[in-house]
Image 1 (cartoon, helix red, strand yellow):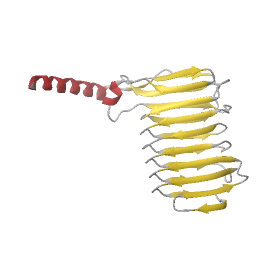
Image 2 (cartoon, rainbow, N blue to C red; image 1 turned 180 degrees about the vertical axis):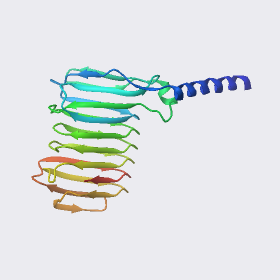
Image 3 (cartoon, rainbow, N blue to C red; image 1 turned 45 degrees about the vertical axis):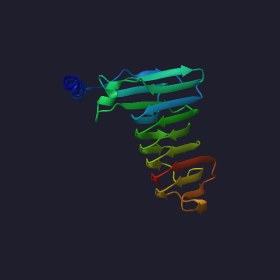
Image 4 (tube, rainbow, N blue to C red; image 1 turned 60 degrees about the vertical axis):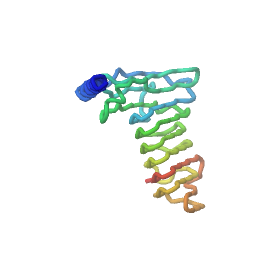
Length: 222
């Protein structure tokens, strides 16, 4: 029995050492046209996600990964495109060297983007034009908007939510809700309502809705 346990331990050590010694690489770039796509789903699980609105003609997906880790999978079904990671046990063994998923969305895409994950951090830059829904658990969510010209809904459990705006007065109706976390908003709000767990108000004409919810994480808008 002891020999059996020792053999298993030896195999695990070899796998761990192999994972630690391998080098990171970026897999081949995948491109998908979003011409008739209404919903783009990104399921990043516990992997760090970088999403960007960019001047590109098609959706671009790549994964910075360990050579033995899983790859990104892009599936299209009618007017929906879904991005997710293929399952691979070496990703679990590769502690401290988790893959990083990068998604670049065409600036002229005006559909909906849905991001779903668990403990993975989400960072968005140059965001504009499309509506956005982000659901997370313990990973922090940081979103920078060039223009906030569509609806946005973000929910997190223990992760912090940080929003950065290039516009001084976006046309938004705001709702910030937190359980035990702090809330701060640098935008001047009209018709402001404040309670222990919720901040509501309007900036500009209030055309678009932004709803930000956390259980124990903080919410910050700058």
